[in-house]
Image 1 (tube, rainbow, N blue to C red):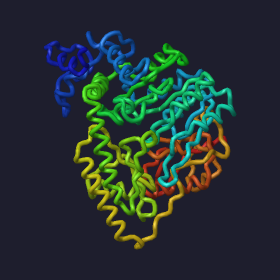
Image 2: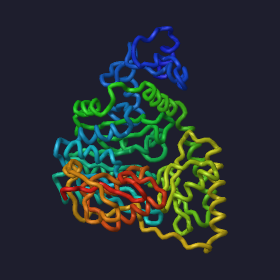
Image 3: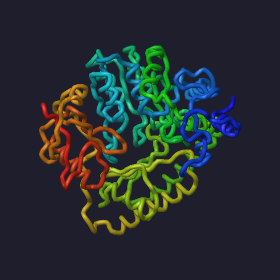
Image 4: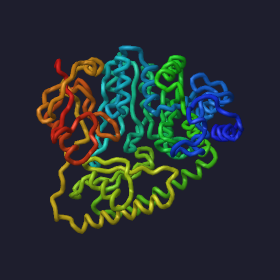
Length: 474
């Protein structure tokens, strides 16, 4: 079968004049070059329609399903966000009850709001030595389902943002004993299970709905993603309806060609590419074992994903944000994100030798400098500040987000109820959800993040003061 990128190039070179959208008419304009404009089209003859595919796009989606071990797969051009919203909406009727890991992306919370769902949260254990969330445990789900038998669907994240992998096979067995669907936000695991080596993906171990961000861990353009469905617990027509609702009616053929190109790369040379990836990453971790101050989260097969380099700075006198800034401004290395106590770098199959060499050199040099000045300054104290505990009291999200709000100074907001989501970005996991009570401890943590230079969404800095939305009526 002809691949989408090849078809787009043939169309560009065909001599057919475009009396249709998009407005650039496949001609260079401003700083956009011909290579980009020439293959950016709309739904014209021979190119199928994503919302009712019968030709090229239908075949590409079938190929994706075969590759991932799913019964059916859908291309997403609005990122994993559209997949998460569609999955939640298809799995539960209005007013249903979902059991959801609290470390889900904020798009899952938006799905709860849009479908007026009742939510029970699962709080993942914390890998305390590194201040990151571990994966949700099967026994947590078993206990929750026994406690609240009216739950209609379960949603977890695996791998987590930092690469922790859940026992999805066992979790699926537990969930399916209740004959309800399991949704896995596997946005950071689009590379799993594609070569027969390493951890299987969630499609292969029994999940009903699985979301993959192809652009996160495979060589694809930003915003490209996939949604997979298995079994009979999900109404497929209902799922298609929500995909039409949550995705644009003008899907980008550049993004769809990017998905196809990425999966073709895996089919043709994936085993060899992943083998090089694992060897290079493993060699780097081996070299970094000599660090005396920085601590690197080890790679555990089946527990810690390949490529998520978690660098802990606890007890070094440095914060994760300071490490992030040093890496960028002194070494020219742009990390993925930073918190108070760690920084995160991501590696994929498309990294070359330079990526590993420069990272290893930088971290070894920084570690040596930290070792030299050990004791010269007081170590910064961390209070597991990325993590939250179950709210003392709350108003349901579905009600709270529609209530009247006002702005209050963060320092004076303890005891109020949140009127907006608050989260560090990335990764976009809420630490405060509309309707939850704001505690004094949380106020101090948010203030600490801001003073530490972290990107906090959901608050406003104005004239040297920090403001937060609170519920007026509460």
